[in-house]
Length: 341
Length: 258
Image (cartoon, rainbow over all chains, first blue to last red; front, side):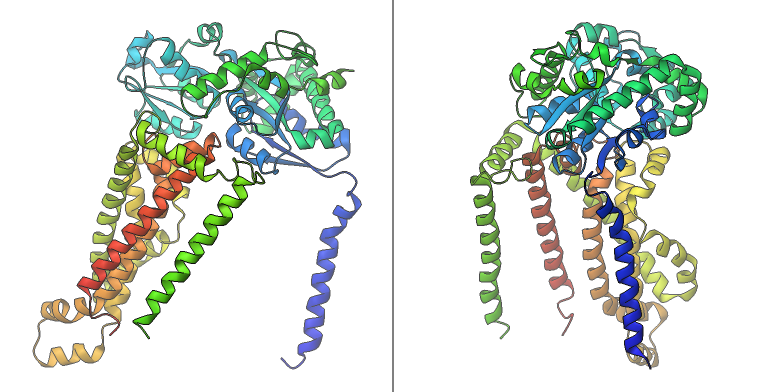
């Protein structure tokens, strides 16, 4: 109080210095803006890229890793410009995004989900056929690939959501509700799935029939269109380092499992078991007609997205599905091609 | 001055709404703003018409509204009644206050999402955890308001009643309660607002019904049009509920503030 001015000056100087210190890194890196990646903590090779800082090393750019709760949240972040890359977004949120003409490009695949997401039923509930599901409560996270499959299963078997009570629960809540005996089944992935199986659950196999009927689900790598246009080299670098992580897992599975286990906070056994469930598609295979195809020659995955979108439109989750060409145009394989070159 | 003011203020209200509406129409009609960010009035009308006629995800819109209202009224009703009763006792007797205050103080600022999973573990996924969540949101607010109301009772009036030979019960019934009533009703209004704000948190517990769940679900697919319709319904209902309480307040404590 006796020396108000010096104190104010000192405070101002401190603030100014602080601001300068904060601003400096940005000035130094102005040429290469940060890459904002939306990811999930999953027991997959994608997490190796983050854990070992592969993208940071490859590009020299700052990479901001932000964890999201679902592919839908990543879509919203991409629309808002907060995320540049969705690393592991499921095929159904991606199909929803493309159908609504959001600026999203599918630049690569992570895995064909196959048996990794599956219906688990309480063994004591005596559910052996799909018709046995009638009157039971089955939980799944709405908007997810598992939700898409579960609704597909009901539709294929002529059941509606009046016959089976489908409940919207996240993974941790599914485990809680299962433990209490509130639900008799859940369509979900690891680690929730493994926990259900360990406490009185058994696998109710649906995935092969659903895949055959067109309810294929996969995890993908998407990029904000504006970002991919401005920084194509960053997209290529991400795909390249993801390829390296995949190779690392293939060639030294024990070491890779350790990295994945540490990054996701599960035991090595759990990580190894989870990793085995997924069919990770090599970058090379992604460019075949079976999956994404090549520039100018779209592969069959566009049909998967198209069919997914049609189903979502039937469910009234999205207004309408676009023509097949919309999905073919949103799959941009030139980055994969460069990553392999 | 009091009589002339509302009429003039109404013009300002109508004006602010009209300016916002004009900006909305202008921004969407010019195509400057993509519909994901801000759906046009036409989009909104279509979405609303579809939700009214076809319902939302296998359920009529009125079901969603009805279920949400039922949850709000049950949770708010139980929480406000019990909270007020508790608050009156807390204000009346210091030792009761000492007994419950730690829990009330702890519960009041607690974000409901923090214990959402615990409610599922304890109470399952039916209506119980949803209503308990709303109950827990209303209870501390009502309790604190009632307690403070009792404490504000004028000591002079209490002393006067005592010298006239009023019993403890008569003091409570005829002196303390009437003077705490305005605070209790303000507490109820606050509690309703908080319960209403907690509705979305309550309905994301194993949802598939209710306005809160509907908004969250539509948001998952970036259906901004449906989200806006849901927000409008929930907002207008909130205003209506608040007005109802104000009306009740004016009838019950018509003397307040005079």
